[in-house]
Image (cartoon, rainbow, N blue to C red; front, side, top):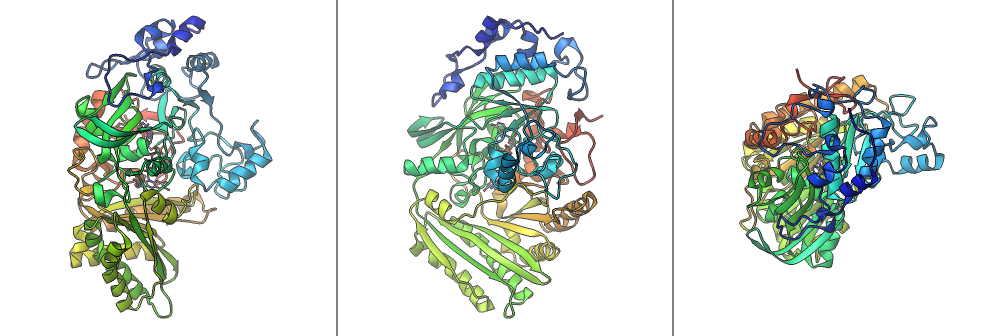
Length: 635
Ligand SMILES: Cc1cc2nc3c(=O)[nH]c(=O)nc-3n(C[C@H](O)[C@H](O)[C@H](O)COP(=O)(O)OP(=O)(O)OC[C@H]3O[C@@H](n4cnc5c(N)ncnc54)[C@H](O)[C@@H]3O)c2cc1C
């Protein structure tokens, strides 16, 4: 049985701030990373069973949970006899120093059955529901309510499924961590009590991998430190670097880089967590065509392992983990607390924005010839270090619209960028496609990013997306290019929304690119995201049908024209067939072997994360998986 007696002194011991003097790190750890849990502190609580470390990496996993019970097939769920009592949650909260949150759905203020009911707050949530920051700042919400189960949308939202608001796929409890010891306690507690564990940073993952019904969530949002290291000399590298807490968002890093006259590799979205899922999943960037993927820039990471131990992973410390954490996906090998990444000198950036569409003078065929012409320049542009972020939408029968948001010339002045792009613009003119180009030159990535990238819209339950990493040859070889663009046109004509990136993962001898980034990225010059949409009040059956069409018709054609290529695990199809190959490629067997080594009981689970094929969330509808059910080991 769980001992419930609270002993103030013992709890104080758990919370004691103990400097880790045995592990030399480079650079030094953040102060809160020195708040490390020790075995002595755990033992002194008289609650060892609840908070003890797991077995040493590489030794046999324990087959028992708290009370000496055999580990059940399913995770313990609210309402189960084994679900911790309120006293145990209170004890846990005290041990955490008050960091435990009993979660409340973000839209609960819209429902009078909840104590949080508040019309003004509801209005605020409704008004801001499509803004990423609202969900980033919440302990459990994420960007795609579809996978939560739509059990608590803001009031009047046509996609709300029920009259009442329920937790659905949101976690039951969340730990707003500010110290490593809290992460260790949460991991040990979840392992001992057999409760599902999730990690939430910002909630940007396309499959809501930060969610799970009946789970304990570790919320990394408050780990906001940014340390600039002008003369980092360590791990075989010297030069400027940043050490980033895992709660830091992209724009925050871009701002810090601006202040220090350097450049960092981050994504296009302002609020993505750079040291969380972005680097864990590989991370594409406007800088990628110049210097490689986000994960390529990592010099070291600090991480709490599934056994609760805190370690540094680098070329020399846990090198196998260092390899896996740079591309193998989040929520798989532990909770990353901070990441150190290389920084580059500040660079000028030139950009070009324009739109074109079908019109009385531009037929649909001419429009698509224009898009295909752009793809014929993919190789030229990325070889020069350029990047493009663009959109194609179907605006009516036989009518289409293209928007360049922007074409980006990294480390190029306008005088260098314009001659690179002009042949493409001449081709558009030759096709009879008029454009009104907007050129800009900026002194830095931060200013170019702020000046050009449009704000992101999230929170919709009226669409979902899939993606494909098209290899270079699909656009260089004219026959393949025609086939590829026919498959792309088919999907857009049928109503798909295309968000395209012209990017590549440049080879960069200045960094360590021997990592687990999906090898498909190394071949890619066209990363295409395809979204299927439906009316906001569509029935579940309609959503299922559209969802099925996206995966098994539109995307099937894309897969057919790019056999053996892949998809991006962070911006992927929740129903991706053969996802192990698509998201991880030839790295999957090694990633799985490391998963079994570091997390033998499967404490960390996320949909399509490495090792997740052994698990299932109960109560799923075909084509519409949610996190709104109990997690069980497959029979
Ligand atoms: C609008 C939008 C724009 C985007 N733009 C880009 C882009 O330009 N480039 C790009 O590469 N990607 C982009 N993405 C995808 C984004 O990078 C991924 O979704 C990424 O995984 C987000 O990481 P996060 O930590 O912010 O989010 P979360 O959804 O909170 O986390 C993602 C996954 O990582 C895990 N995780 C998070 N933090 C940790 C941690 N500290 N330790 C262990 N596991 C952790 C979570 O459990 C989850 O499984 C975009 C997504 C959206 C919605």
